[in-house]
Amino acid sequence: MKHIRVLIVDDSALVRKTLSELLTSDPEIEVMATAGNPFIAAEKIRDEIPDVILLDIEMPRMDGITFLEQVMEQRPIPVIICSSLTGQGTAASFKALEAGAVEVIAKPNLASPDAAEESRETLCSAVKAASVAHPRRMRRVEPALTADAVLAKPSVRGVSVADAHQKIVLIGASTGGTEALKVVLEALPAAAPGIAVVQHMPEKFTAAFAERLNGICAISVKEAETGDAVEPGRALIAPGGRHLLVKRTGLRFFVEVREGPLVCRHRPSVDVLFRSGARYAGSNAIGVLLTGMGNDGAQGLLELKQAGAATIAQDETTCVVYGMPHEAVKLGAADRVLPLTCIAGAILGVSHG
Image 1: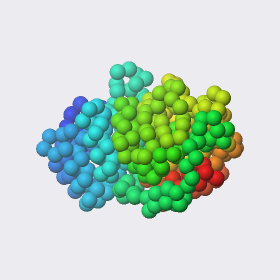
Image 2: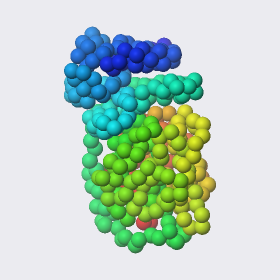
Image 3: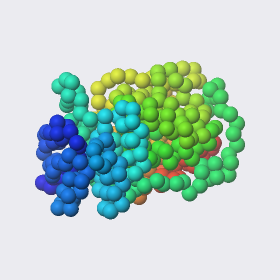
Image 4: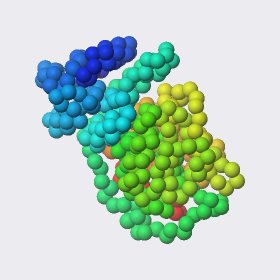
């Protein structure tokens, strides 16, 4: 068996030891080396190229983002940011994703056996996803045309919550999804249909992620709270560590945020969102599955399609990891398989059709 070789770069000896122990508990993963700072890491890379780099951001002598930028410039290697995700760490994590990191995860939580096992599962899954990622595709992708232009300025009729034909959009994503979501949501006009999103990401990260998108998109974006309406011009992001469901009362769609076990090894899970959409929205839904490792969302997208929803999967050439969309395509769950830059236009095309 060929092992996934990981280089751990963190200035804390305790964190390096903890990460090493968690990773080596998986028979598919090997810790190639550890380094206390980017200069030592650079020496290690000269001797042997790892499959994945696990990188801290705040380190002495050189910060993680500067090192990441150098790696991406010289020889792109899949990099996972392992951060405390508080304050400056969260803001820096966004910069790291823009610089080419494939994923951000929280440092392990060893407060209880259950938390430790969940941290181990998250860490090992992230490394496996990163090992098959295409970091070059993380570079900023600008839509060739905005969705408005694609549709030649579609009529904005101000869909109200009392419209029985109101469409809602359900989007799922994982590895590479933060940048993919930015491309899709930035291209949508202020009158776009209401959106609910599950992006696999840790707690404390989703609120900042939503706030960041809110500042650059024509639609409003916020971290979802139970009772929030799924309404035109708004996107709701599932909070890290909790599931997101869409429900309906009368003609009004709203979301519910719920605790619960991991589903498809994730919380939030795309399947949970999509299955709730199949049940409560049916043909009023548009399901979209973006880049990511594994199969979360594939079965849910099929259930959406069977319930009469329009379904879209991102194509292989634009995915950082062609895992989740590929599983959906194999199930026959996707009506359309499209490049990333065409998805916003397709959403509007269906919703105005």
